[in-house]
Image 1 (cartoon, rainbow, N blue to C red):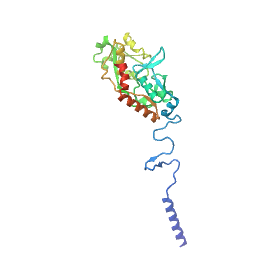
Image 2 (image 1 turned 180 degrees about the vertical axis):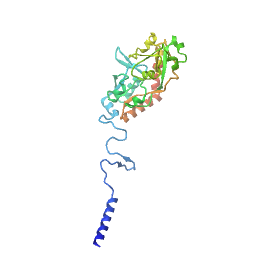
Image 3 (image 1 turned 120 degrees about the vertical axis):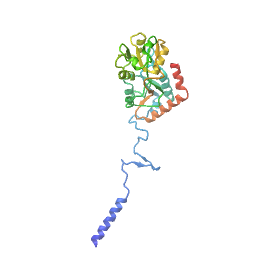
Image 4 (image 1 turned 90 degrees about the vertical axis):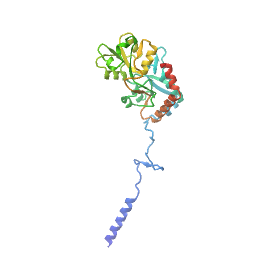
Length: 289
């Protein structure tokens, strides 16, 4: 009888222990009063910033917004070698962005091959200047709300326009034609993917590349329609072919460091307002119309 009673008591003790709630550990998720689950720690719901913190706080505190730009892609970014000043659609936008953050812009020279690397490494806070969104670039940086749609289209000497028919790829990719590109960007990627019979010529300086066509050292450049419209405006010798129907679809946007969602969301809101209150359209009209 005593043995049976002891066993019965042990069974009751085990049952009570199993039914008792377990004490939360430091690794368990905490449940909030509203019933949803949250996580322990200080990262919050907007991603992590590591040891950097969010630029939305640090830029106003420092009073400086570091802007990476190539300076060789008018109408979006243009460097005047005489005095070292920058101008362009995205340069004006960067100045407005800095002002909205109670800061001044500090333009940091970069190249197309290094622009996203410089943003990812936080050499600068944002990358601007007609930057096209691509998947390889999106693996390194975050892209916000697009500023405009674009796509690759040809620009040629107006005197030779008839030689390229409708401006289709088949009209361009033929022996005897020289297609000129600037290295390290989407223009070179597009040319190497589609040009098989024509000659591809690399020209390292985007600021002088269109003069190569004007002077007859190259025949065609395929770049963003926005750039062909600008170049044909300042160089009457050049004609943009079907800029309203480019070969590709792309969007331009500003690049910010990955993981800083608060700053990206602020830049998104800034761009959204500028596109809808006429600010961006005004800057674009000054360069392209």
